[in-house]
Image 1: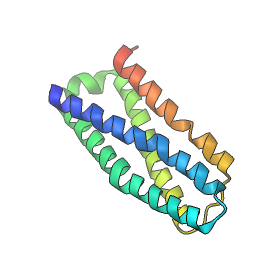
Image 2: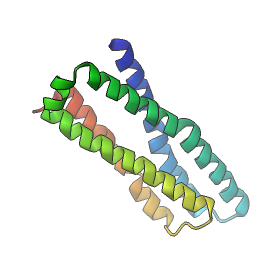
Image 3: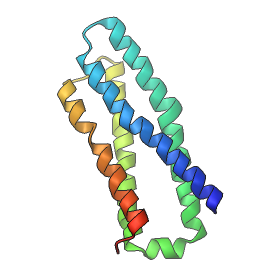
Length: 140
């Protein structure tokens, strides 16, 4: 079980590296004024999302399900775990939304300013801090 947990944590860290970086790329992409820069950001965003973020998310979620399956009655009855799952669902939704935003950039159909992307770049902080506190402290 400790090996599963270790690889789960590694996958989560890798996933969050992308979750923090992709919206930052969106900030720069939205502010870019030349075609060469915009094309470069499209490539960077797609590689980050498809090669790092999404596989890491799949591994993190799969290993998380495996860990729950090993002791399901404990986890499913714990209120801290139920709240954590809500945040995981929000994280997955955020991940998919970032994919949607990336697709808009790829089609040159972005409608948001770099200030908007600076704001949404802060969302992952909550999506990381709350679950970590819930897992470590188990407040209820």
